[in-house]
Amino acid sequence: MTVPQTRRDFIKRTAQAGAIAAAATAVGLWRRDEAGPAASHSAKSESYPDFSHADRKLISIVRGGDRAKSVCKAIELLGGMDKFIQPGDRVLIKVNAAFAMPAALGATTHPEMLAAVIMLCHEAGAKSVRVSDNPINDPASCFRLTGIEQACAENGAQLVLPSAGAFRPVTVEGATLIRDWPALWTPFDGVTKVIGLAPVKDHHRAGASLSMKNWYGLTGGRRNIFHQHIHTFIPELARMMRPTLVVLDGTTAMMTNGPTGGSLSDLKATNTVIASTDQVAADAFALTLLGRNISDVPYIANAAAAGLGTVDYESLKPRRGDA
Image (cartoon, rainbow, N blue to C red; front, side, top):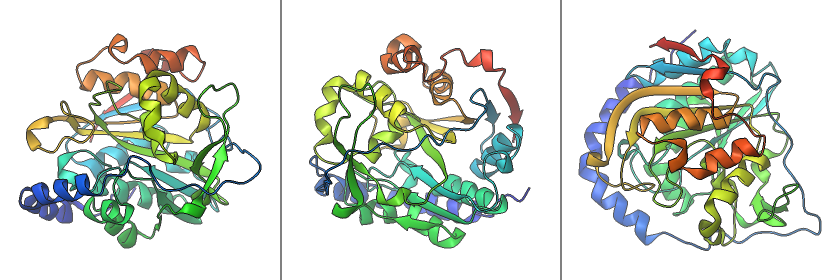
């Protein structure tokens, strides 16, 4: 399996990160919009398809400091990307691009990780690969400063920015919060597989921002009102979006001051990548990288109680390896 050659560019970007970090953080704060983009409502509330893989009990845990090698190894341990992506599939990769900050600060999906996953999808025969998110800060600035825009351009993926017309009202069956709520829709047109790709990081309200919290970026409107019900809302997000696969980047974990961070001192080299078809199990293991327990982050246990996965990741017999 080919490992994408992005390491050299990453080193170059990281060397520049210290010089631009303060400016990028200032831009991010200036462009922050709690209301989010306006939504285009239709008469009918819809729901996303179930994109989940038939085998929902797969998890791999790979140790290593090279993101590209680690994610390739993690997918290989699960049976290879062609286990999840077949020729002709149209893939959407949901990244975390919430903030207009350089990737070295750990608040967003790292472009080196994204490039590797895009290439794995192409190698498996995907007809198309799209990348999208609904950032908190100005979308164009977020995708540019995080390096996600460049990773898409260099690896043959279509970057889909949110716009007012990209949203539709979505209702999650049995939910109390996600009912007729605007959610990102246009990027999913024709999509057959969905991969969630997020960093491992602290979150001052939720306790941790991991794979389930990543779906927050599908919502529009005044989504900040859900913060007061965060441990109910995130399980509803996990019910709303049932992905084919999730990948968590714990190469460096944001241990404090999440979700934005802003300093390299917030980060710790935890040298781990997790891939799973069970987003609850993936998040439960990722908590160990942050030094936290299930009781510290109630939404994970709430999601398990709702039948969305298991917190007992060891029961899935994790496939472990080194990159």
